Length: 407
Image (cartoon, rainbow, N blue to C red; front, top):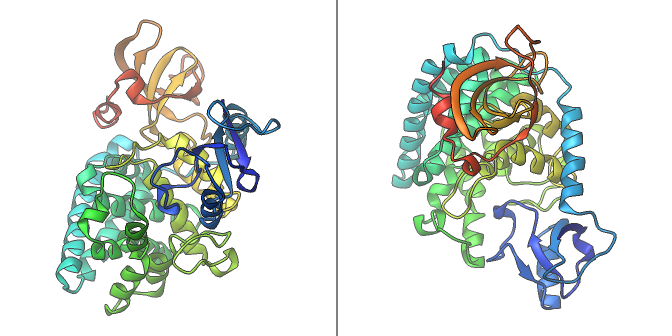
């Protein structure tokens, strides 16, 4: 049985099931281990871990602690409450925007690849190309953010750094736009998102792409990338303050446990707080060479859980409203027993998106794809509802195939 406890309640003999932080915030070789001595306890506390999950079948128990099922049920109930707010306005349909979004995404990836190559070679970054990409992404997001956000979920592990930068840019633009920020601030948020990991080009490839946990020395090198990126960008004429701030501070945390400067909440700018949320969300929902990504709903649940200490809860709520509780590309189970892919958010109700039903769990077979607007009643293309999300691997379903081959 898995239980959640405060880190200060840990005792020698307990078995850590999950340190409950994203991998870049702890230096342990393993995420699951028994606490054998005081040194291990001190090391956990020094990392800033605040709450952990223990396995009481493999170590000591804490009788009154809630189970993982109880924790998740409470978190899900809170997410549903958050979802009652209106979703972003959509100007054109997902299908109408998809073709343009594919071209923009491909071009953006090439621009980031060239930027990173130039940094590796010690060349100056061409900001004109960056500015045009951010403008194109902004225009696409204003028409229908779901197209580019959905494309951002597709990541080749070998090109993760480039694709992650494009996704963070897209999500930052979407986030900033949903908060009603002015067009120039949205642009700067996008530039910051596109360039935030520039410093990773100063990290040796064998560390950056290591298919396993990093050693403490390697971990320290990896954590140097915000300052490395900031030093690179501040030496380039035309890079403004917001992108510099995002680059330097996107790994800071509200409780002061982040890096590189361990800034407490009031010293972290709102834009850097936004970037922290976006960066972690995209990272934990992506497949990497060393771990399997979470589903989007699981990632949002984790963000909300971690907002208790690490992130601004108001911004996390706003971000969830931006992408939807069931983001585009999520595989959901409907009350009818069908499995469906979310293809578009609903302006009026985030819990009732537009989906494409593709599979019957009752007959365990694919069905002819049909688009269902869950906000509509029987006879109007609706009359079904989401009862939960599913892992596509469990059903061996290629979600991208159905998401991008629209009927």
